Image (cartoon, rainbow, N blue to C red; front, top):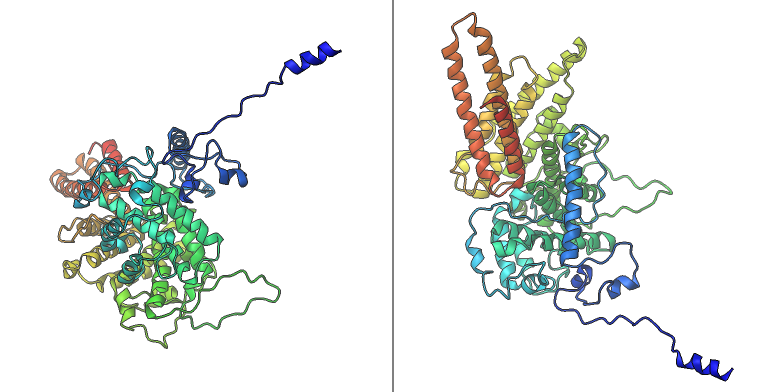
Length: 581
């Protein structure tokens, strides 16, 4: 018994060695913990251990890149299916980290701007975000002060083209305050990160563009935080702004699902905050007895400028959603203006400095703003932003009416459609005749670009109204030439720094020209055997071919910095190749 006991004592119980973890170097922590300024250990960081989750931690090395590639492949498959079945029902938008996988790409940008000298210093400062922590260049929470100034200067001169509705001077001053991120005196963290993202994107500085993805992730994380927590009342409308800026960024980069996700977020917040009822003459209805009081109302604006920002916020959301629906070209998209029973009483927007001057009367009250404008011809203010929004509304109504047309309509329905089309056409032409000429705004860069889009939107509305008629050729081609002319006008300063809607309108114009070339060739072939109309038809075709060449050339210029326009250009070129043009 003693021997067996000694043998048992001599044989120690073997335990597997406890894995030893070494301290992590810079940039080796989980991404979520990196943003929280903590460095933990792999494979599961401390914060994720305390709060279990299904997904494993992500890091900025090969594992994260593998996931990014898999996510990109999945998104591409979904997009291919969407493009192959454009009229199918839209897939649900379940985007938790939209754009985190490959949303920042180098698409052969135009030559770097002088800002590249700011970030072209020692290699230890400018390193790949996958090779090292993004904190080295961009700061732990925000970029260094000098870089913040540079990014703001890159974006703010072009801000309105991408859906920025806030007071630019006030925004810049508050953004540069020496206060911590999230302080009520500064813009919200989400909108700041969205602006930094756009500044990087427009800078074209190669060391910086690789960090677009970092700010996409930061902006989306801050949006989620601002929605899940009770953010400061001042910051609520800033979250709408962040959604809009991310939506236009994703649309410009041909990421349709992400763009739709964020514009829907802006719509939801706008309606939830009741910014469609600003200065409404309708009596406010109290909540129903026993109904949940979960609505969040904005506090009264502190001054005229803040009220103006809210008014401009609503109309910016309407404008950007209309643009996205037009770009996606799917009939099942549903926007604010199609919402049944939604009363829009908010007045048309002014320029932001006009609110500063007190040009919105204190006793002004409004009702049925869109209805009165479309059906009664009640004009709005003459600010270029207001004109742009009104043109977008007319285009939306024209598109909606054109979709109701079908070749086999009953006589009564056809007569009603013809009457409605004639009235709306007269309304669009009346609006077009009152627009300022683009040449009057050549010296006002941002306003000139906005007015160019307005003229093009009116042209698109006329195309929609005439395209199903028996004599569609002349008015449609004339409207298409208007679109090509305003976007090809080199007298407009920085004309290529334009919003995503430009590519969509240019594609529409080129498609009209291509269809007219097809019709001309078909007519020429029909008449060739009976009448000698060869010379006249060839002259008409030659003119159309020049128009088409101008359109493709203009799209090529805009495509340099926009993957969306590059994609739209390829669609036009494919059609040309199919016709042998």
